[in-house]
Length: 250
Image (cartoon, rainbow, N blue to C red; front, side, top):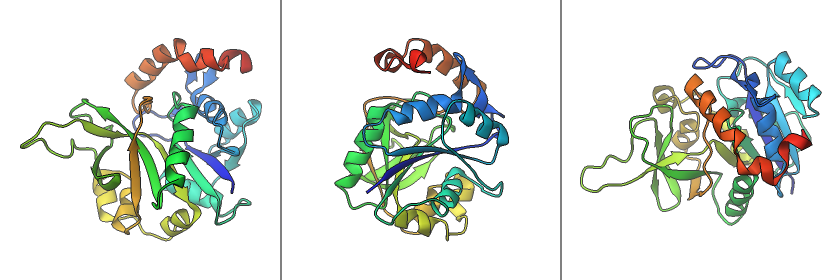
């Protein structure tokens, strides 16, 4: 069994254009994501998936594998589906989708995701962290029963009507069976996906089973310029950089 990390990235983000190549202490954001992913103990290959020649060239400069995709894709899952259909991969392998705007992703989170998934019978799995960040539509929240995801929303779900609760914030790292990805590639965009703007709603609406687990190490996606400013501050003192001697390695 091979485990391949695929990192979808594009330049046309509506909230923060060109964010994949934003500089964070001397390196483009997408390179931070790829290099950190390579420190996972369980991942065999890391490939950036993009329709941008600029991103492709940056990856080549930093010796990161990259696959040039078509420009037709509506989301990152569609983009990695194209790659899966065009590389040497078997039905027993696993694919991890690591979003290209997660420059603080931790290798240990990747390893825990793989370990939890191997013990489960889900088609797809993603970690969550507990959050009190109310009213933030940039954060995708999970509604779960046990370790199974039943709904995902940009709203604060479930609603605290009779009992206080913490939100379950979806971390943007997702593991798929090859079968689940191939099925996803045949589905049309779903109604709730269009309403919520959450691509995994397409999987839920087509009855794929999504599991989750609580993660202790926080990461966050760079959605708007304020997120970028925050990650620049965090990266300067990030313990992972010191632990793996990142800047020297680069």
